[in-house]
Every structure is written in C-alpha cells, then in structure tokens.
Length: 603
Image: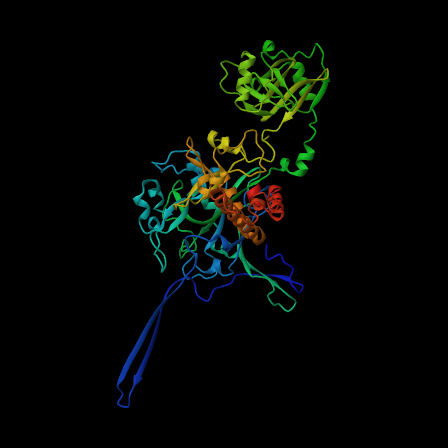
C-alpha cells in the first residue's frame, strides 16, 4: 500500500500507533506577559497577544490526500474476509482533530461499511420521493451547506429536521464559510449503533506505516491507515464512507446520540466514499469449478408407473415422493410441498435454449429463472407464440427474427418444499427422469447485484455504474458511466452530432429525461483523450506543428486562388496532400487498442 518503487536499501515495514501533530487543527491565541519592577518597587505589566490558525481538512478530503483504498473502488472479487481500509497521504491527518475533546489518542476519522439497503431515503424526508436518484443520493451523501450543520441548522429543512436531535452543531474556524459544501449521510440509530467503534476501537483501527532500512531510517513515505471494524457482506455490494467523528464522543467515552430514537436518522459528515461487490463463495473461482456440473439427486428410467401428471393427482405423485426419499431428500407431507411451475414449451436458438414456464418465467436448461415475461394476456401455456416472442423481445433486444416457440416433447416441473425451504427441478433427460436441487440464492455470475428498482436495473443491465458527478455550475449529483469494455444485451446511448465541433466535455453530456440523470460516458472519454494528449509532449507538439503547417498551406492556397495571375512559390500543394505524421498515427493506434488508458475508465 506504500510507494511500490524499490528503495535503494533493503526496507523494513514498521507500524506506529499514531503520529501526533505538533498542534491540532483549530484557532489559537498566544499571550506573552512581562512584569517589570523598578527600584522603588513599582511594577508594570506589559502583554502582547498573537492569534493564529492551524488549518486542516474538516468538511471535505481532496482526492490527492487519498493514496489508495481496498477493496478497490467498483471492484468485484472475494472481499468478504477482508476489512476495508484506506491509506492516506499525510501521516498526521487522522490525529489532527479529536473524536473526544482533549483526547489526542483517538482519531477523528472512521470507516463505516454499509449495505445499499442500510442507506435509504429517510422516512422523515417529506419532500423527497423514492426514486433511483434519491436512493443514490442517500447512499453517496446529501450535498448540504455548512450553514445546515451549524447549531439548529437542520431544523430549517423539513427533510433533515428529524436528524437535528443527534446533531449538536459545530463552530466555524478561520478559513471556513457558511456556504462551503459538505456531504452528509443519514443512518438510523439502530443501524449505525453496532457499526460505530468505541474510543478504544478507534485507537486500534488507525495506525501509521513506515518503510525503513536497517538503521531505522525512513526510506519510504510514512502514511496512515484506517480500517473498518465490519467485514463486507457475502454476495452483495458494500458502500464505504470515511466519516468525521469530531467531538462526537462525550466525557463518558460513548457516542453522543443526544436522546435520538432507534429509528431517528443520525447525520455523519462523509469525507470520502467508494463501493465494491464481494462475490458469494459459489461465485469464486473454486465455486464456479465446483458448480460446472450439476449432479442429479436421482436419475431413474422413465416408466409408466412414474406418473408425473401433477394436476390429475392433485399433488406430488407417490412414486416421485418415493424417489426423493430414497435419494435422501424426503419431501414434506401434504400441501407443504407443491408444484410451483410447469414448462411445456421452449425456444431453441444458437445462443439460447430457454424453457417457458406456465407462470411466465423463462428458465435455462438448469432450471434457473433468467427473467420474467410481462404483458402476457394470460398464462404462458395459453398465450399465443407470437405474444411470448414479443414479451421476450422486450427483454432481449437482439433476439433473432427467426425465434419461434415450440412445444416440448415432455414436460418439466418445479417443486418447492416450504418446510425445508428447498426447490427442485424435475426434468426428462434421454429417456429418464431426474431431479436437481436449485440454489435459492442463484444470481448472475460476475454482475452487480439487483437493486430491486426497475429504472436503476435498466441502466445496470446495460453496463452502467452510478458515479458522483460535480457539474461545472457547482453542487453534486449522481450520473451514469459505461466503460468501453462493458458487455450488455443492449447498446449504450449514441451521439447524434459532429464530434469535430465539440470544444468542451459538457457538450457531450447526455440527459435522460425520464429519470432526470446524466450520462457521463462520452464526456468522460472526450476529457480523458484531451488529458492524455496534453500528457504526451511528443504528441501535443507534433499535433500543433501539423495543424500550423496545414493552416499556413491552406492560407497560401486561398491566396493563390484569389491571385491566379501571380506565381506562387512554396510547397502548399504538397503540404495539403501530406499524410498525417507517422508519430501521431502511432500514438492514436495505441489509444485505439486502449493502451495507456487508466483502468477505472475501462471497467
């Protein structure tokens, strides 16, 4: 996590409990007094005061002060056994303020890890409707003014008034204004209470790392590390916030809730945030290998005595129950075990082989639901084939025009045991009947988890991710970004304009009127290309020279056209027909293959 360039001498890694600054951030007054006495015992006192301020981060954290985070932002991997942590650049930063007044050992910064459903729109937000934008704003933080955080400031806004109880306010320091922007998250007390570290925890969750040589001399930068006390959830997304705990702990060493109720929102100043997704064990490399082949619970020859007419028998056939019992999976008696779906039609294409369930669910060959059909006039077994095709095409835009619905030669069934909470897929296979146990948490592999919101899922299924967006006009919002290597079933939004006329990235922002959010994809690509061109001195100088040569040649050609009776010397025609310089072509060719593109733009 430190500077990875090898030191000149063999390095050792040292851990320090903290790195106390000489002075904490804040305002100070220095008073000097001198008393003089003459021979007649007359005294006079002279004094001088000097006020000064030690400035330090309080309401925001500039990006250059963050060295690295782990798990990485927007990462996808086996992170459920790793405590999220952040490495900062300035070694004294966590101890420049106090979590408890006059307690210099406890840092004022802490990492809190949440699941998305723990950061939701506040119930008391009377003028905030539940929408994808509102949910994302609740997850990454509300952009407020510092004036809202002063004593009694939250009561001036109805949606934040319920959080005033747990917020005692703060006083401004030199260099801070009431109009400064600050990001604030609100978490119910019952949710955040087990996540908050104690004062003793705070001292153990922060430390400094030092790279030294054999003589204990510093050979690498000294950096502070802050850890979370909570592990990420398995098989889901986690959101991490670096929050300020300045003066939030009282004299008794406890966090000051100030009488807030269990459901009251507790405000926290968020200085930095990122999110990542931790794979469930079955989606790890080992889990994928173990689940490549599904082993049937039983596999018996299809015979006349294995009567699978569920409807006629009004329940699970006795012969089928016996097969489950002999395989070690006895089914619960009575109505606790039911046939929950049946498939008697299918769609077979080059890239798809789907079973159409009577309920309108579309299954793969392993019996797992891929998606649900909407808009059918009746159940799927009674719907016309063209209605089923139309419903599928609304979910899969690239469905071939040759797709047809055909009857199954034999039916497939889904059986659910409500007592044991198990679900089975009973199918015909090569003249036999077999049953597979379905995993209830089956989800698409290597994909962000479902948000449960239709509009948000529409963007996520196209490969978009929500990211903080700071518009040129100020403020903070959430916009969508889609990397060039992202795969999806649907095409991303396209531009309908001449790119040669673009002068600023804002001209390439796309606005989705139906959800009220921006698409940053093309604007980010334009800005990245500009920065990469400026970063390469060879390319920027070569491009400038080529453009200047062409401009001069064009001017000479226009002059010659206006005065054809005069001879024109020079090589204007040759310059106009000259090829694009090979050096510039090579640079653009590397860019075409994404060489040198930062990884976070590709994901």
